[in-house]
Amino acid sequence: MSKDIQPTQAFIDIAQIKGSLIITKNFGLRLIMLCSAVNFDLKTEEEQDILVAQYQNFLNSLTFPIQIVVHSRKMELGPYLDKLKKRLRQEENELLKIQMADYIAFLEELIPQANIMDKKFYVVVPYNPPLIKTPSLKSKTADKKLTGTEFETFKKEVIQRANVVASGLGSLGLRCVQLDNHELVELFYGIYNLDLAKIESFLEEQGESKTRRD
Image 1 (cartoon, rainbow, N blue to C red):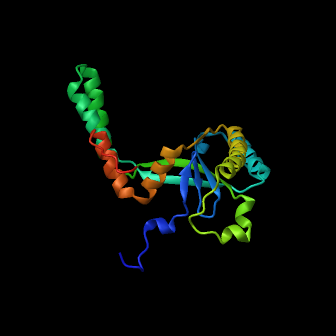
Image 2: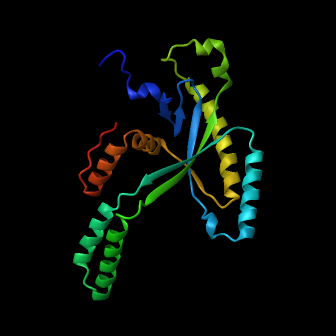
Image 3: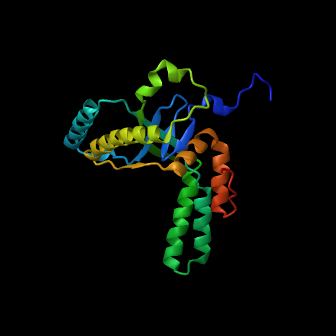
């Protein structure tokens, strides 16, 4: 590899994933929660006004920054259609067969005409320890890692923040769940290796997936 070409990892601000948290290269912590959604358009005007006011109050109550990320991805419905067709061939109830055949025909007509997107909503809760602001730590090498005591102390801080966020969003009827180590790896692997993630998803549907990650 040429010295002028750097690996992808050099441009990603992730040093380690540990204890269901992301440790950045400057020793900050990031906790990511997957959140449910509310169909705002189905609410009455009064309900919409209440939600907006509650959301505004929630944001104004925060004493630290958060990041809200909407991750959209085109849904791959091919494997789902294959399952339906297999089930159709096995179905003995004539009425159900007719209904399933109509549903399959509907999907086959819809898929080429519309981009059906799967959206997931994430909240990123950061914590940058005061330690990282000191010149002595900034001068450390990239091999420096947080000690076990430092990590546990900072972890408590970011979890406290996450609890505040989850409670505030809970008042809006939203449910938040923290991603664990495996889910964090899957999330970033899918973002930075979209084509490979699609292939592996298909192989998993076929029961032929091979682990590519440690």
